[in-house]
Image 1 (cartoon, rainbow, N blue to C red):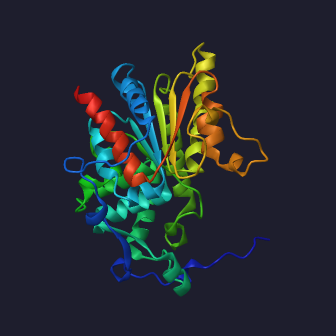
Image 2 (cartoon, one colour):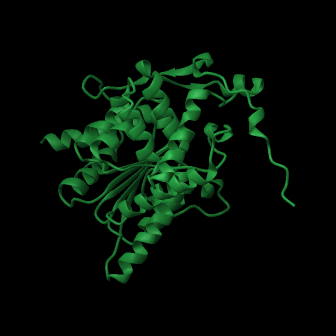
Image 3 (cartoon, rainbow, N blue to C red):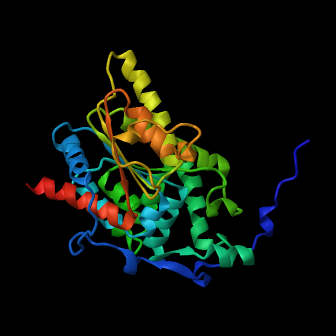
Amino acid sequence: MPFEKFDRSQLNILPLNERIHDVDLAKVFKDPADHTPDFTHRDLPELAKSVWEARRKHDAAVLMMYGAHVIRTGNAGYMIEMMKKGLITHFATNGAGSIHDYEFAMIGETCESVAKYISEGQFGLWKETGIINDIIEEAAKEDLGWGEAIGRYIWENNFPNREKSVLAMGYHLGVPCTVHIGIGNDIIHEHPNCNGAAMGICSYNDFLIYAQSVTKLEHGAFLNFGSAVAGPEVYLKALAMARNVAHQRGERITDFTTAVFDLLEIPEDSEHSAAPPKSDPRYYFRPWKTILARTVADGGRSYYIRGEHQRTVPALCKMVMDMDKE
């Protein structure tokens, strides 16, 4: 006998204009044309050179996986410039990253006070954001990926900030932007119109698109900004698939660069090339053992750069774009 399930028809969904927003796009968005990065790191020039060479010397893939805070802190302008110039070939995020992108594009604001709205039982229950579920249900019928579906909707509905949306610009420019969800992780999963099967189809399509990009990682680069779980885990499985096929063809995917940008205090020198012992709590920080150590053990190189995303993303992107002008 099935267990009792929650009846979502009981939920009170309010219009988004009744929500107090914590982040204003106009205040956080950084336009590369008039913004000067203020972050430096000893390894940044070497990493930037690896990214530039991956594209201009080897025509290899450069993938950027990012957590939702990267969008919330206004870095889309730099990411889109890298996209336009062909310096990053694939963008990937989690469900929350796509939601912030969508809300910014639609109303120029995002983020709610979790403390306030969870107390009131209203957290995440906003009508216009829930439209994402309808977009995904239709996209599943077309066998599309999540990122393309949201990007297409933003672009074709002419959202006011569509040119500041990574997903919309990816759709417009034909650059893959994929979304890797976890069921129950995101506010739209609370809504009565959420279709789990449709979500699975679209996000799994994105995983396969991502895995195809990873097949082009030899001599390329993988950049992970603030994604502590989805970033390393999606990358790990995709790399296993890509290497499996490469080995059958007598090929290798070993010579590439990885970089993790985060805030945890871990060694920023060659010591991070080996995973910490299991007795060290930092062993469970997956980006270290997966991205910095295990997957580059056969010939790659890795970098750990500690800093806030609103400083590190612009700094790396500007350095790569400056190299491209020379």
